[in-house]
Length: 323
Image 1 (cartoon, rainbow, N blue to C red):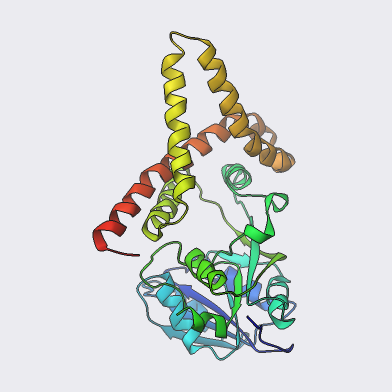
Image 2: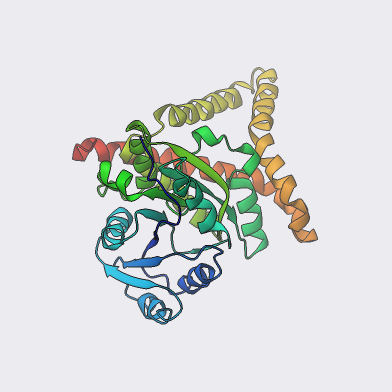
């Protein structure tokens, strides 16, 4: 597919919000610090019942701001905002995070240069507590783990041309979760090109408790099941835990099986301990030893959440006849 040609094209930065009064100001402040200011900012009210939109209105004199309203979920809100936007280039992010100063400049550069029609930005944790620092280090990939050709953009850090968005019918509004991944896969299946912009970084706050982390991952896996994403990946997880339970039970008679299980667990956790090592120096001294024990707990909670959420999504897809 041919990209939109030319540089200096108008860029519309879109966000959809619902009850984000505690975080929307930080996002808007980060928009003001962009090295490449947006030509317009379109914020869609997706049913706010708090002071979110009141805070947004206070930025009208400092940002090229427009507001819309509509949609019952994130993809509907995004599509509403994009329909109201004027720019041929769309940058998309979310509330609950903030943008590093060069984010917009970096994420739209491949579009302006004609190298791609879809761009994936990156994300890094912005923890506010030692627990959040450990969770942010363990649960999310580092830049050196990314394979750009396979890294699909997430809705909080992506950009695309309006032409491409129109060609695939926008974000799939029937999906409450994983709509960004499905949208990206449809673009790639239609022949549009994707680029990875590693310096286009958004900063997000990790969940503040294991319960909140569990609910987050359970929803993600529910979205996977609902959208029919990654079935082999989820089957591998079930198979791995099933094998582990068999080894655990069999070790009572054949202790060697416990050795095999221990080696498998160590191999599985090694990547996450390497991530933790990279953030080790940022942890308070009293948390460093404690964090070592948190790694397997975080992985277990996340995996159990996914194993519970995925079949629920599959069931819902089959019950409703969704594709």
